[in-house]
Length: 279
Image (cartoon, rainbow, N blue to C red; front, side, top):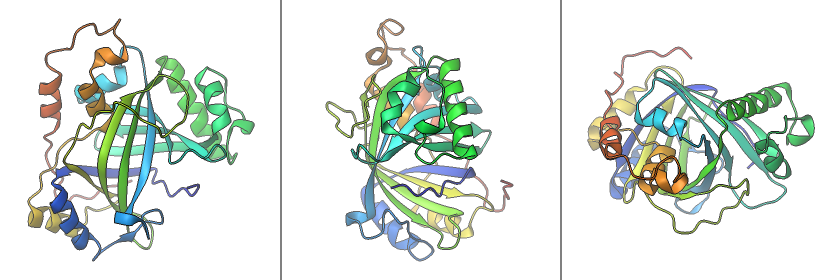
């Protein structure tokens, strides 16, 4: 999975839907979109995503989500299999007001431990060296060092993805079986034990677009009666695991208001269908 059709700037609306509703929505979506290259031909149109999330010891990135800070970011290492010769992707996912901005670069697995230990990125660390990739690697490492971020959790799920046939400017994904487990080393592995499933039995539906909100998105939401909610895989996973499992010295006891903050975060005003977005 070495191709990269990443949209640098886009908008994302999230919903938690019942499994059977998700299957009916798939039939609606296929009237407008086609399976992406990784979903096409797969059982249940699904492939596996894995991410190693980094955070500071006091979990500042996690608390940015719970506190609904408008301008925040996540640091993660995304991978799809256990192939030792395949790339992993260092990713920065920023939220700037309502927009989602992403940067990423393909990194050699053999270089992950060195880079997480503080070594500066070099061309030999990158899977396909380029100015864009080098810039993303440098920014990832700079942000990591600025908050002393280290691996905290491994998040995995099955993704079903549909995209516009022409340019990937419109995308719909269904994420199932989201799992989260503490992970404190630079080891890249798909193995997981004693995980939690923060959204089970729900499916995370994401509507993604780079320009005008598609009218058929509005129609689909109204037809199936789904409500826009927050569903942050990293933050919800940490909340379900418990902050004290990730760093007992900072969090000897569980904060009492975590659940309340999660519930309040899961209620956002839906974007109006006539709003235009400039990317």
